[in-house]
Structure formats: C-alpha cells, structure tokens
Length: 437
Image (cartoon, rainbow, N blue to C red; front, side):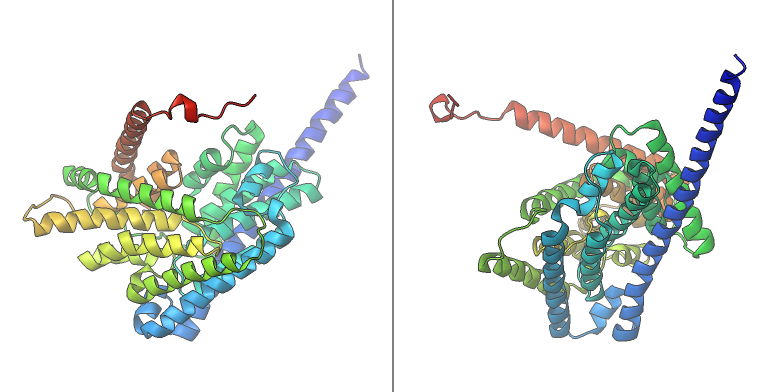
C-alpha cells in the first residue's frame, strides 16, 4: 500500500513535467511561426519599397509602366511555378497544407520543413514581383511544418505542435486568435483530440500576443462605421448574393484549374500551360493594377473611395488574376483573395444600385466587411471562421452579428441550391452505365 503512493506521485510528476515541456515547446513554435510570418511580410515590403518606391504592391503596379508590370508578373509567376515543381519532385508527398493537416491529425510521415521552405520561396518571388496571390499558405504551411518537426525531434505528438504552428501563424498573419483556433478546428482537423484542441488554442493566443505586443502588429482593416445599425444589415443583404455567386465561381475555377499536388511529367505541354496562365496573370495585373498583391491593400481602398473601377478590379480582376496565378503552378493562398472577390462583388452591387437611383441606408464599408465574411465562409469552407475573423481583422466585435447573419443566410442558400441541383439531376440511361463483372 505504501509502495503505491510513490508510484502515483511519480506518475503525476511525470504528467506535470510532460505538460510543462509541451507548454514550453508551444511557446517556442508560436514564436517561430510569428517571426516567420513577420519576416515573410516585411521582406516583401522591403523589396517593393526599395525597388518599386512604395510599400504597397498596388501603388507600385500603378506607378510602373504596364509593359514592365506585365513582364515582372509573368516572369515571377513562371519562376514560382518552376520552384514549386522542384519542391514537388523532391518532397511531393510531404508538401502543402494537406500534409500539415495530416500531421495535425496524427497521420502520415509529417511535412518536410526544407521542402516547405523551398515552396514558400516560390510564393515570395511571386509576391515580390507584384503577382496576385495570397501569402498565407506559405506562412501557415511553414508554421505547421516547424511545429510537426519540433514535435518529432522532442518526442512530443507531432499533431499537437503542428496545430500550434498553424494557429500561431494564422493569428500572427491576421491578428485573429479566435479565427486561428477555429481555422484549425474547421479546416485542418475536424475532430481533434482534446490535447490538440488545447494546443491550437494556445497557438492562436501566443501567436497573437507575440505579433501584436512584441512585433508591433496592428489591426488590418478600419473599424465598421455603424455595424449594429439597420442600414448595415440592409447593405449586407444587398451584397450577399453577388458575394456568394462570385466566391462560388472563384472556388470552382481554381479547383478545376489548379495543378495536382503531385509530380508530373516535365512535358512541353505542362510548361506551355504554365506560361499561358502566367501571361494571363501578368496581363490582368498590368491592365488592373489594383489586382496586385493579396487583396488587402485594395480592400482598404474601399473605406475611403469606393468606385465602380475598384469594384470591378476586386471582383472580376482579382478572380481572374489569382485563378491564373494558381493555374500557372505558382504556390499561394486564396484566403485573402476570397475576401477581395466577395467585397468587390458587394461593392459592385452597391454602385449599380446607385446608378439605378436606389439609395441604400448604411455605408459601403459595413457592407463590404459583411461580404468578406461570406467570402471566407464560402471560399475556404469555414463558416465559423467567417463569422469571427472579419471582426478580428477590423478590431471591432460589433461586426459579429451582421457577419453571423450573412454567413448563416449564405450557407442556407448554398444548402438549398445543392438540394435542388441533386433533386433534378438526370441519371444516365441504364445501357450507358458500366457495371463491373
């Protein structure tokens, strides 16, 4: 009986020690993820400012000759696609957010840090040459890869620290700790272990605190004008369907045109396809400079000067430019571009109402913010993230009700449309169906 007491005490101490080690590692992974997110962003800004003359890619694209913009974007996308293929041939089964997600679920051999960094360099080149892409994919993949790698080295469950790294990177990139936790919960690990949930929450909190309080991060968007007013909900309703349709089109196009995440034969057809889409991406940015970058800078323009030109650039231009960039094989994210496409579609609907003599209550900006929540929910299949992350991006929790209402109605429309489509789906004649055996 007395011998059992020391054994229980030893077991309890071992658990406490294990928890402390995991906590320290979570802080380390969060710090590394936040630092990488900061370095990735600031290094791109450094190049733009010292070579192009301004921190904003949209301004650089506007101030540079169209021919030079076309050459820069096209060559940058083609180079990024080439680098992505190198990484794919080297570590294809351990690349991408899918590999990180598998590690966060406790499956697979885990992501490759070296391969992920090579792939991230492709994104960096594309973004530094004014291409239309999101940089979040490189940041999230690197954070998750570092977490999984450190967990393996320290004999901790890779799933825990992979989730920590993804959440910390998300929180550092968008200053959204709650959105980071929900992103891991919805998009990465659908049914995580309780310990993994805790690590994801810790990563979101640590990544946010490090980014904001140690690295000087600030809110990304302007606060809402009057998001709790009736006019805000009217604007959200007026822009909801256009935002939903535009985002669904964007989602369908990139799913159809994106290259497979596996090595392919280096044929002339593959390179021609990559070059053609790189040319389309270059032409789009040259014609519409506001499509350059990840979309955040262009979205912020809507706060002060909402115009038809800005709406078209965000909705149609961004959709074409980012889809072409992804189709070329350049690695990049779609989180920010999805927000831009949805915001542009909503803004275009408001401008059309104005041209038709219809006066809507509320402000353009409140409606654009609500539309962005639809873009996130539909474009990345993460409705809970859509409800909260826009409010965190703007540092304005008053936006949660209008964003929640927009996302709920959008999901209702999507579900109803899917049911109608499946109910009226025409099955092929029986004699054309192949039956095995």
